[in-house]
Image 1 (spheres, rainbow, N blue to C red):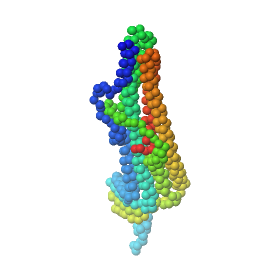
Image 2 (image 1 turned 60 degrees about the horizontal axis):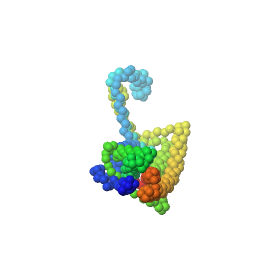
Image 3 (image 1 turned 90 degrees about the horizontal axis):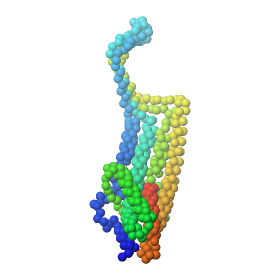
Image 4 (image 1 turned 45 degrees about the horizontal axis):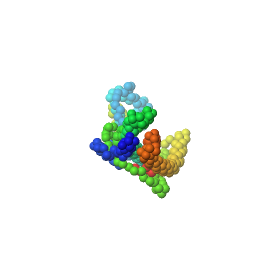
Length: 446
């Protein structure tokens, strides 16, 4: 058997070999995409912090609601007078009786410094403010709904990042398997070329070219391994796990998209995208805030009970109480209330415009992501076809080499072309998975 036949046999064995033929090491636990998303939602630190925002808004609503209830106010002041407390009564200031004016002459009553206490207590129930406070409470409730939608938005971003990393791992693992075959092939070619040089069948430059090809394939393999490790560490971080937690991913296949999917995707995004809901809620909250604004020249009327007590003061009554109506009114505010209403009205108009713009931008985003996914799928088909053509070319050149109709450099060139096609196909697959993750986010696949 000639050296060429030995080379052909070795080349066929290497090309036909696959990682599945070797005895694999025990595989780590399989992590499905759905399980990864569920873990991220449960354990991601940023997501857990965002969920606390809704709890904060809920407490704010509870605190604001208390303004519609009676307000209890108690003040107690106790101490010693710094100077005597004097009351002067002019002659006859208390009236005139048969004996004459009371007091018959000017009199002064003095409270000497000593321990004295003043107690003031009041209970005030808003009346005319209840309508405004009701609108304010509804506006605060919209803030709670906004926090919920902001959490959904953060959840959408988290799910998209998980999918991108998961798809990236799927792509890199697939590329790694193909690259390992290329490394074994280039190593075998380099070894056989050295034998041919020793037999004076190949030239030294052929040996150098074969070794260079082997080093290039080995370098690409190491880069892919580091890339795969980086993706796994980033995904583990999103899942709230140890960075070195081992796992395997499920094999996913690209799915074809039809033009009919775009209408359904737009409708789903318009109903479920957090950005659309946030825009609507902000418009509703702005309207409620406008309605809660106090109108100019409107007094605030409260049902009021007030108590005042004195202890340690001579002549003053020990206590007194008043039940009735307490009204507060600012007859001239230099246009402040009117300006506040105008500002709230502008905020409402702004919120309506932004809500409409958000709905439009969501539709634009869905269509753009759909077209990007179609382009990525088409490019993936083209790169797969180019890779299959390179494989066939390598097979044909190898057969011609066996029949002395081709040179060894032709085999090496075909091998290099296949490696480039494999790399282009891997990049196209990565672009497809990224486009798919973005489209799933655009149509609100949460």
